[in-house]
Length: 239
Length: 239
Image (cartoon, rainbow over all chains, first blue to last red; front, side, top):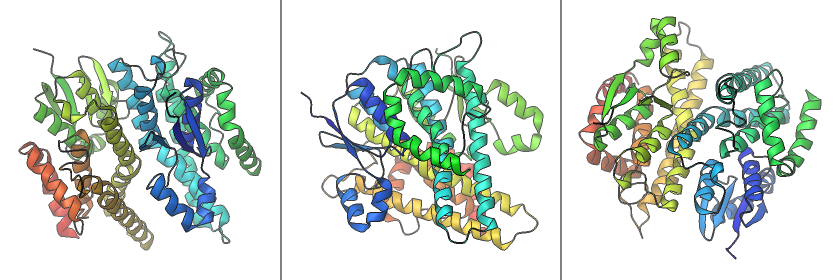
């Protein structure tokens, strides 16, 4: 029996949800270690310093410890596991050009939606705890929301058309089999729901593709999003 | 003779400079096609639509066309070339754990410094063209500057210590040989000079490491930064 990979995660984080699904679907032996990143903030210094010393110096999730080898950053962890463990080829194809297409998209995602969506969620939460909510804050949040909507439009109009080309319609983002790009993007697209933005509203290609990912990844998709959806339903009701 | 790789670049972009050095140092046959991203804006719609149709739908540099295979995103292009062309192993080691360390750092860089430094440069340029420079703009730029300084401090204190550990001092970021992480980071660290921030000021580890990269990559380092330094000298004089 190989030593299970220690997996530190918080299902509120998009990369954590993608990794949870990957571990479950590929049956890589792993030890789940949930870390509440919100609680970490509230419990104060002690938890923070322990986490920093033993887990990740940036106190971020997801994070793995594979028989002593500690690794952070969600996309990097997925690629490392695809190399090191016995997982089907389709997750991250060895074909150089297919691999380049996955890398290209995920680099775009990291440079665009990933930072932005997290920042929007953070700003909105911070704003909701302020006693004095002023016009300046409202304007800032409106600007963020517009950027989030624009980025979702680029996903719909530029990236999803790759898989919806009439000549060679693909079921998933890169070809007919699911890859790490699909699960990372599905969890990414769900993220703005935390602040009441419905990413699928008016976006038929994104909607169709997400349904394919969900049905392929069940029941792990629902498990990964169970608590997340409870929170997003509250956020949606408020808006 | 293999078909030269068409390389579209602007040496004001950090990823373009890293790729220029990589092409030169590895002797991969390539056809340099300089694209002025600034001029593109000024020349208007025609250039933009041609660029979008033939080169990159996001009108970004760097970009390559390898015998018909078009690829964008700097880090992705470097990894693709390291796989497809005859380049020494040290640039992007096949060893799974070393590769994971490079990926981890570059993912952190994309999520942190890359978006931020480009945004700061863009905001500062936009501000300098405004007729009415008000207190609100000044405050915004001050906040950005602080974030840039903080990110440079993380590079100095968290990432550079990997290579400066007393027990196993490394010459470069990941081991004793230069990798794609070093050239990408060197060009990244130079970027805030465009807006008058000296990244090396008070950062001895970063300074020492950058000197190693420069001396290893000469004369390509100087060629890649020749025009860039002309502009940064002006920015430095203004501050």
